Image (cartoon, rainbow, N blue to C red; front, side, top):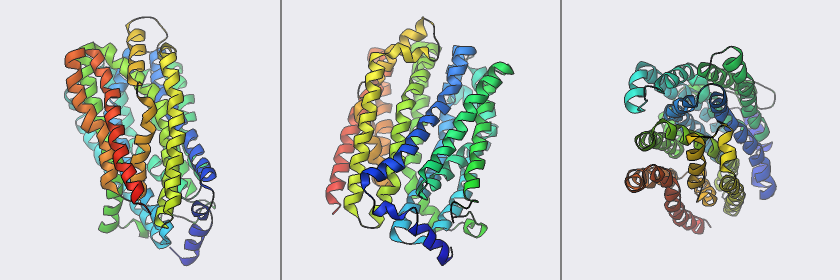
Length: 455
């Protein structure tokens, strides 16, 4: 990058990250991310709502069943996007602006290559994955195959758009980053009823609406980096991969990548347990519950994404007090948010289930009870999520990976095998809050120790 461009990058929107009041800074960075992630939550659940209300409840089970594949695609996007974005923020804080566009160029190439491998492999072994890995039943298989095949057509855009969008936020423009998510979600919401009901495409219509909206979001993100609003550009000379830069990106992004893979693995094991102890209705019920929980998880992730460049920049600039203060306020905001969700889900569970299938029966009964059980220890989760982001932000991937994996791998998977043996289908649902308790205790021990060492 030229000296002029480097000056522009470090002296305009990013300077305030190291000087402005933390409360206002966190609000400015997190609120657009919260809105964007909340819209993104709607983005993720609107297909299930339309399919559940207008097609078939088993369509919800079909969409839920293929979520591990979508999570793997998302994981590959997070591996590069979050890893490069964290490195991007640290280098800005250190004043090493000459490295910024090189990091961006490497991220662009890696976001094409790694998800591409996942997509090609999934296409080749589509039926085998659905039947033997995801354990699709005869009644759910047609819905799952139709949806997944179409989603894979646009898989590259679903990975590259969110991955590149991280750089917009770290470039000091969180509201522009938010617009990326809003544009895609609004288009998806508009196209869903047109394709599902207007054209009569059913589950296929939901999938086409999703990939078209993701493609438009990708075009928007690329457009930003060719606009007058930023001096940053994706340049060909920055896209020649260098092993040290690739390694740094992958190392920092490894924690959220593995966490997302772990969620995919847990999802596979969970669906198998659900089908074994409760059949297709249990799979559909948990699909609805997960969709509802996303409405709270995504905004907490928004706070987490908003605080990441603040912690990273100030840590790189050795302003440790500001980094710790940003972490504290992020945890407070996130906790307030999840407590609000906890109260709603405990008091009105059937109202939320009815959004997906408004009729009395086994799905309503099982879904309502499952929602209450799964959210029993919800209030403590914000601390666990933001603690992992804290270690990503300061460039400590080992701790971040441990915290990311603790809830899903160390605790949730063993509990999924143990509790159902004693409590059947309700043991499957109870594994989630039990894992939450252990994960929060572990996160508290590791994070508080690190905070004391930052002087």
